[in-house]
Structure formats: structure tokens, C-alpha cells
Image (cartoon, rainbow over all chains, first blue to last red; front, side, top):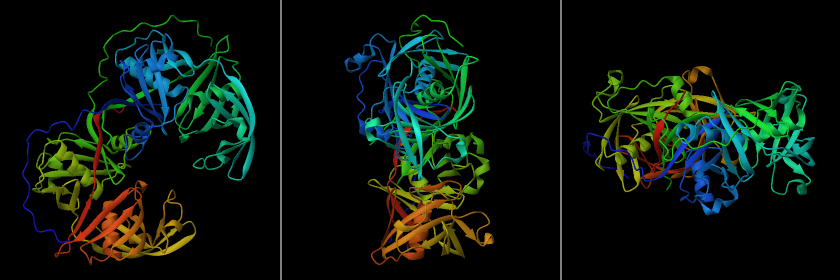
Length: 289
Length: 289
């Protein structure tokens, strides 16, 4: 095909109009490099299909994120009745469209959104999650989420790159398999999913954390999240490793991940408090075909 | 640290305000899975630092993209005087902040933006790029960019994963090293950058394409883009491989990449026409700290 020469075009308008804004409003943010698409839906009228979540989270053909958090005012959506009398409901999905109990880094990003949208002050609020109600508050730029208590899970064996390790099971309340290694620089390539045995240990899938202990209050960690792959940070994973391998001599355990550092502390009743930063980087309209 | 029990928070407002919109307006889109942040700047008043581009393109702490395209009306920014009397200037940067000549898939996304913003009709326009002026037009949903003619570059040797291949050099006008392989499924892991010898062949760096030829008019290709890594598609790369390894018996060569299919045709004067789809998926404000 040889296209004939075409005349130079002329402008149709001198002032640009904004491209279609009939899509779904979003805010994108991250907590220690774990990134989320916040979908404000205070009146609880949106239905996000797994296909939509996958398309939105796709790194090149969508907006790109580790997960989607639909933010709904408590009581607005009868499908979220499990949230009880929380202030706001965290309807959380993984990037693959699956539903997850909750996500600590995501909860911080949600709190930052609520604050910047003028929906909360610095007084504590209750976030309703599929893992139960979570108290959360903001002090200075640090956001704290009460993640509830950890519960021991089954022991298992994690395999990756021809190596094997024993793993401790922890529920926070989503499932984690925690592997203590002598040197975090020598773990296998996490672009491949680690495998777990026996299959019956975590039939619902599991997040795998590799952890190096520098002191009882300082851990370094990398994580492979189920349904996502390696991420720069995982809030419940940081809680799981602090609970399983740290101790709280001076009140908190520092957990260093590729995306940044969070602090984990423990209340007298066993509740774990996750404290860390969260940033919002963009807001707008999402129009997926 | 044991945080004392805190009372449940109250709402500060009943209607959310939109989070800060004082940032930089953007539109995100992709052409065959090669994704871009369009920054509309018709009056040419913005300066995008390499640091800003890197932060914006960061997949987790920013918005995420393969590159940034600042769209400026011709003549508005004296720093873009190289664009001459084009209609709109394509000020293109790679994800690492470096400046690049042009990008065919990016040019299609820019055209889609111009159309949806009401700035052009379906009449052809001239895009000013650092590679020279490029005529472009939209027919139905397919966008065609006149990429200009290809020029032969130096031969070289590409190495990756312990293998070596001879490579053909092509400028479109950015530099490409084209490697013909018998089976595209057997090339090495492109998460590692291929290396090139001699260094003097492309002192400014080079994009490397691995290509399988199914017929003279049907090629499959994967690409490692300098400054980016493997991408789902590369417009100038598709032109380079069609020019180097295809022929035009029925007018066009189909180049299939992981992100989709484009057609390359050749005018009588040797100009290569790149035709393919482009979609816009989001628009809004980008606020990078």
C-alpha cells in the first residue's frame, strides 16, 4: 500500500478539551512502594468485576498497581455488611482480581486518601476490612494501622531455585509463610514463584517472606505475594515476620523492605501496630475499554 | 511502645473534596502495550527534569510508563525550535529521563490524545520530533505515522545468555540492532540487557530486536529498549525489522510483538508508514513529592 500524499492538517480547536471524564474516579498512591488504585465510592454504587481490576492493575495497558481499594462509607453497600459499624469499608482486591482480607500498606494509602479528601481528621477511625475492623490514625506523616493479633499457622517447606527451607506459618489474618535466611542477598530469583509443600498447608495460597535477622528489633525482608509476584513491601508480611522472628525490647521492630521501612509494635492485648509512610501521587479518571 | 486506646474518629466532612489538583495534568495511554504519560503543555511553559520523568515513570512509586511525551504547540517553546513549523511538538523522554529522537507507538498515543482533546480532526497533521517532522493521520481506529526513511547502520555482534549473533544496524532515526533468529521462543531472558560489540558501533546506545521471519510479509519480534528494558512493543523497532528483513509484496509487512500487531508499509520515496492502534486509559493530575 502506498498512501498518496496528504495535505497538512488544521487544528479543529484552539483550546483543548479534557479527554473523556466519564470513567471511574481514582487516586493512585503507595506505601513503601506497594502501590494501589483507590476507587472512592462512598455511596457504594460501584461494582468492580475481577476483569476490571485486572485491566486497571495491568502495568502497561492499564493504570498499573499491586491492588485496588474501593473506599465505601460503612452501611452504604449491603454487599459489604461484614464491615459492621466501621467508619469506612476497605473493599480490597489483588491485582489478579481476587479478593483479599486486607493489606496494611494499602490501609495506610487509604488513610492518606481519607485525610487528603477531608473525610477524616487526625482522630482515629475504624476501617472495616474482610479481616475484621482495624483502628487507624495519623500522627505527623506516619500512619498507624492496628492489624489485630497474629495467629500461628501450619509449618511447611518452601522451595525455590533448587533450594528448600522450613517455613513458619502466620495468619495476620491473611496467610504467610516466613523463611529465616542467613543472608537475604543469597535468596533465589523471586521472579519465579516459590512453591510450598504440603499443598494442604495453605489451600487458599500464601504469601512467602524471606527474612534476615540483624538484631531482635531489626529485620530485613523480601516478599512474594500470592496473586501478585514480588512486591516492594507487604504490610501484613512485615507484621508476620516481626511477630515470628522479632521481639519488642524497646517497643518496636523495624522491618526494612526494598520499598522502605516500617515499624511494628505490640499492644498489651497482642494487637500488632503497623506504622509507616504513605503517599498519593495521582488522581483522575480511569477509562478502560 | 503501647499506644493507649483511642476513641473512634468522627467524619470531618460528609462530602469528599478532591485531593490536591495542583500537580501536572496527564493522560496515560498505550500503543500495542507500549505505554506513555502524555503531558499536555500546549503553551510550552513546563520544564520536565530527568528526575521528574524518572519519578513519574516509576512503576510503583509513580504513575508508571515506558516514557513521557510533552505535547507542545509548535512555536510555543523556544527550546523546541528544532520542531520547525510542525503542528505539534513531541518532546519525548525515556523512562530513565533521557531524551530520545522519537517513538512511533508514542506518536500514535499522542495522536489519539490530540483527537480526543479536540485538537485535531481526521485530517493529517505534522508532528515535530527530534528525528524530524512526521506526518500522521487517523483512519477509523488505526493511526498511521510516517516514520521517514530507514538508514543502514553499522554491523555488530549481540551477546546475551552466553550466545552471540550478528546484528544489522538500522537508524529510524534512532539506533537499532536487528538480530534474525530461527525461533523467537529460544532467545535468552530479556530481563538482562544484551551487550553489543564493538562499543564504537553505537556509542549512544542501541535498541536490540530479536526477530523471527515467518514469511516476507510476516515477522514476529521482541525488543530490548535502551534506557527501558524489554517492552511489549517498539514502533521504530518494528520499522527497523520490516525494512531490514521484510519485503512489501502486497504493500505491508505485519510485525507481531507481545503487545500487539502493527503494519509497516513503504512509500515510493522510501518513507516507512507505521500503522497500529492506540488507547487512552486514564487522565488526571500527577503530584510527585
